[in-house]
Image (tube, rainbow, N blue to C red; front, side, top):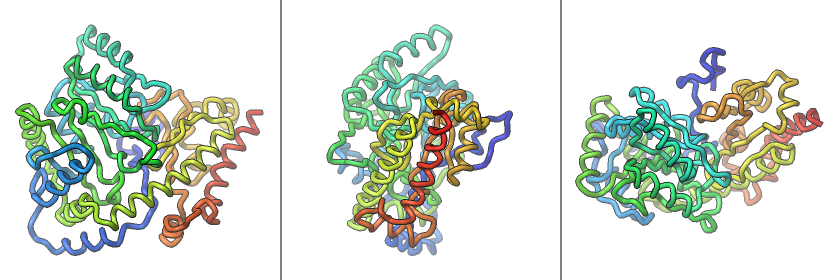
Amino acid sequence: MRRTDPEGRGPVRYGPPLPDQGLPVLPELRAELAAAAGRADTELFGGGPAFLDAACGYWTRRGLPTAADRVAVAPGAAALLLALTGALGGDVLAPRPCAAWWAPQARLLGRSVFRVATPAECGGVPDPYALLETLRRVREEGGDPRLLVLSVADDPTATVAPPELVHEAVEAAVGEGLHVVSDETWRDTLHRPHDTVLLSPAEMAPDDVTVITDLAGAFLPQGWPAAVARFPSGEAGALLRSRVLDVLTAVGARVAEPVAAAAAYALDEPAAVSERLAAAARLHADVAGAAHRAVTAAGAVARPPQAGRHLYVDLGPLRSALGARGVGDAQDLEDHLSARLGMPAPGGHRFGDDLGALRVRLGTGPLLGGTDEERTRSLTASTPLELPHVQRALTRLGSAFDDLRDDAR
């Protein structure tokens, strides 16, 4: 991630990607991609039959029965959100903080994005009362809010919103006439899937929720862009899908045929894929837990990570020590920690947080090793935290925060 210029303070082109898996590509996925590399035909806009059928099976296994005429695919979730925003019109509401790529889609179309506070226990889903108050204020000022984007399993906070909060927020949004886009990119990365209840908004408001999932969250490498969208049932859902397909076609947003073949294979969830998903979730849970202990022991604040490959850290309690090092805002903090840790540490301003707040997202992928051999050992070890290369990475992380704690004292 490149240093931003002082004037830009985080332009989109320098923004952070999704937290990296930090693991070698699954051999079976490589084989599927290679087998399709020689095909001369092209994947249809919106997805070919095999890809669409695989997506239907994926959602049906998660309690969301889906027909192929309610699915569309694109080369990344950003393209889907852009198309949805263009099709729905109006202004957009999103929680603060939220994924770095949400707001640029709306702003590219000239739409306003209004941030809504989240409750203390989690990110990704707005506080229902704050949502209603924001809607009232926006409308009084002449705004036209039509779309709420949320994520139950969240980037950047790595939390999972409790079902009762999801229900209240979606009920409030639908009651006010908003369409809800549920970004479920991280739903298959739960750290403790048997102990964490994840409720998709589409389960409670099937006529008013579109689900999008970027397969770089759990299934595919980031360099193989593919994402899927599930539209509501009924005539309104069919019309929305048709409009989205128009936008995808107009901008040439088509998934490459080899990537589509690998994505369809992954979404069918054969044993190799399911085993990798489970092993990767366990590994990132262990490392994220250790990283969380390290940063909180130094006096920083972070919610315990529950999903994904990251955690969101507030260094406000260490502001005096950071100020002595020339760190006064989130961009300075990003520069300082990225250099100190030797890994990307995007500041909270990239996720819609205040520039003055000293918050960063830290990924766990860079802590798993510097070579494919080390990363494979991390994945297969019964106690990955005892591996020398993982210990070194965690020690480097802990030392950076301990230095700040000592200076603050």
